[in-house]
Amino acid sequence: MQTYELAAHPAHPPLGVLRVEARILSINDSWLRIRWRIDGAARLVMPPFAGKGRADKLWQTTCFELFIQRKGEDAAYSEYNLSPSERWAAYDFSAYREGMAERPFAREPDCVMRMGQSMAIFDASLPRAQIPDPPCRLGLAAVIEEEGGVKSYWALAHRGAAPDFHDPSCFEASLARTRAA
Image (cartoon, rainbow, N blue to C red; front, side, top):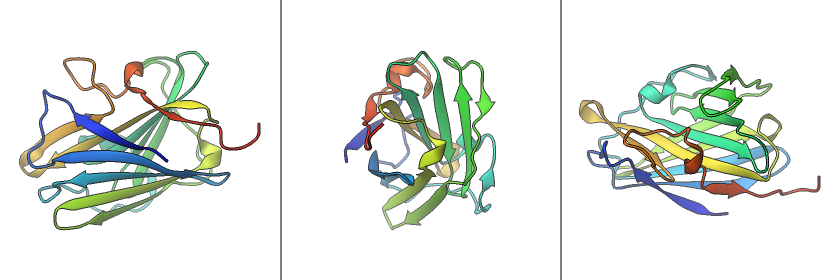
């Protein structure tokens, strides 16, 4: 599968992070697996372990995000926030930042963070039954907090003066159909 280089929003440069990439590891009938890699993670701030469960406002510290919009549909899309604390959130939107509702999840995502001296890996597995069917457009993003409260916002693209992961022009990756309809 493809690896995507994320770019930091120019108005919010990182302190020490050099690079963030996201990669779709696999998709099958059971799971969608995604990995984010952070190079230059020595000053990374990690949210404390909280155990699995839904939580809002995960983006206030280090958090990894996925946006999915079915190709050929209207402006509706889904957002997934995944935290190293193992907390997560999932929402559906009817249009750009409109009609927000919690996305039902029968089985929780699995999230694992591994830290090295200068890099970090965050792996997330989302139950396949809880994500829209491909083909889809994807937005891959991350909020990275470093020491001193420095936050950088990483995405496939940035179009405005402020970071906005919901901007449909940021959904530059794709997820192809992997099984017969």
